[in-house]
Length: 587
Image: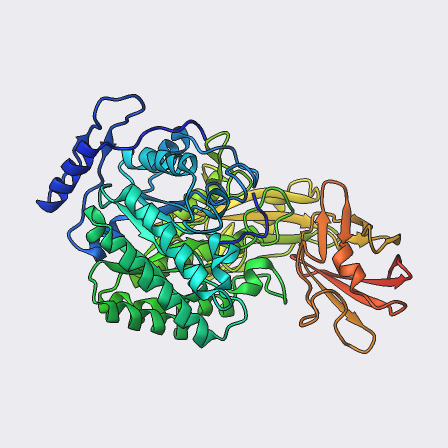
């Protein structure tokens, strides 16, 4: 994926010719053990441990579950560390293996390491580096996927105006990759092209160009011989999207190629408004849930039920997690997304590959630890089972009011509710809480105890535990309606509004002019993009309106902003821009 936030070692020789012949022979006779095979004794060689080689493409893709992406690394532009990650190391690959992953997708961008004119030679140093990382993963017994990645928008996208040139370069690129890895074991898989996209084309034209490239990719790889003659290949839809027209087109294409060793690959980053928090998409609501369910149902109906395996080569949320910025997506809502995705993927027979952009995202490439271990625990649990959730992971108690009983709706997701705990102490049903159907109600007396001195923020954490999966945390939180103050600034520098959050958290911002029309840089919805138009600064008690948002305002036209908070509180604020100066006043 081309991220909106772009976030080594020495070369070593890969398996020698003797190893390649040995592995080819092993594959031919159908050996399925996990015995270790060593490369010939030469400097830089490492032992290769094959994963269990499955008998069918469907079984192979199933054996790859779960999968992980080495994102923003070998696909970074112009070089491996250009997008903020350190060079990949063997220790990193070992750590990913130790986390329970069975396969790794290694996105590779070739354009900056390749001549831009015929014969489009790939730099030998770069090819050796790709081989080195592949070798590390293979040595750990992982299935490995390599591809042509950001080339998709670097030069492949110009095929409509440079058809012959793009096709020639695409074929030359895959000819060199195929030749390099032709004798690698079949646990190495190739992916044609990442998120195929084509400038100035209709969907019908894009489908045709994508089919042409996929067909060329298959022909080049098959003709290179060795294990490539029957290696499993992944073919993407246009954009790697799961829209019906694109999945139907790829199914037709795969059937026409009449090659049993082909699989489909798509990506999924959720319902767009929820994935970036725009247009009021603050929660994993019925619309977001249905979008996910529909897409996985489509993958099952179009592909897996017809014997074509599917590799979800990337999944996640577009703007979560991100340790460099305030969280756009409320944590509990994100956890619900990952929980349902794991379930939908299993029921559709789809193997999932987490897109990890690096140290600010999921797995810290320096410490070799998860940036958020509890988030990973929830993701890992979703690989095999369901977890119970609730309508929210917070109970808000207004400090200015007497404490009353509060209710949440439990979502058991096929499990059984077992009770509430605070640490190792089990709360008492009937005294501390009641359950009626799926309605969980905490009593006023229990909440009074849990709130303690009622300091703003989280006073206590309790857990709803279920018969399977991970517990659901519920944060008992004291708040009062946030208080904003008058402010001034410039459109180019942004406006920082002094804000007393008083224990609350910002959900979204609505922006309108007096006539009801939308004010701001996102014109199609009054609910502006979190961190795009506005952003909370909790540590410094501020709320920022960005230059992008302010520059889009009409001069002299007052905009009314409504800030929506997770407690349900709203605060109205007015902003006016005049000749580059901006004033903000409390409504």
